[in-house]
Length: 67
Image 1 (tube, rainbow, N blue to C red):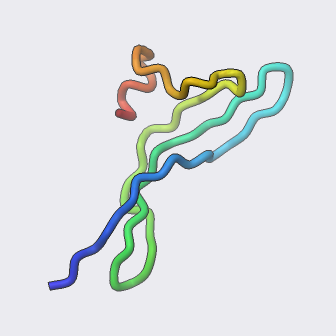
Image 2: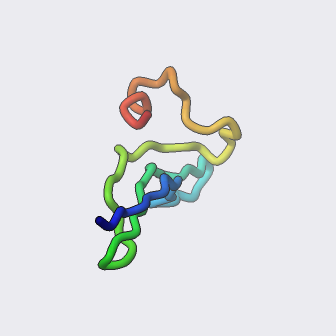
């Protein structure tokens, strides 16, 4: 029996520049199987402002679905 392995990563999927720049990000599971590497799952996308140094706000209802 062959097992696949996976890794959870933080991926930036879009960057918006301007007066208040922000990144749109999501968590992804990168899996490695017999066919090579592939994205096995993705979280909902969430926005982070460039000036936010603490990461996603767990109290925000929009980002709660990502955890």
